[in-house]
Length: 132
Image (cartoon, rainbow, N blue to C red; front, top):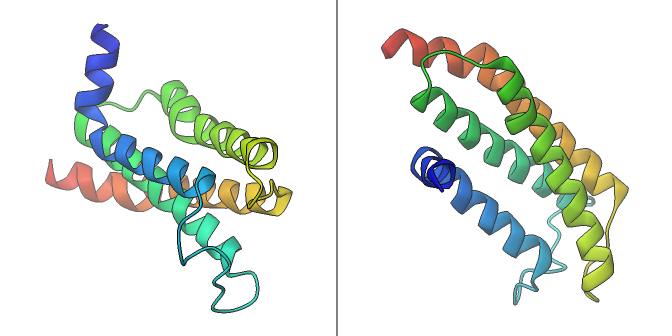
């Protein structure tokens, strides 16, 4: 119970972002589905959603931890979001009629996660550590 309370206190923005991604992934948004500004616009959207989610996740981790536990960060901020995105793609194909699971969406989700990791380690962490 204490670990759940700690997660809720340390990662509120990440949890809200995760809920928003889950909603956008599994439910039909009125007037938005099918709108493409350019070909493969949805791939950019997948990349940006997961990059934003993981950037927020890294930010909250650095904000609440003085030292970086590389094993926890690897599993919590890289592997878990990638697995989550794969599960979401599978759920889309199994439980929705208006969305399909797509390996390319999964690839762009993964690219967003990895891009956020590079940004967090090489830009965010040095800046945040300087001012903390």
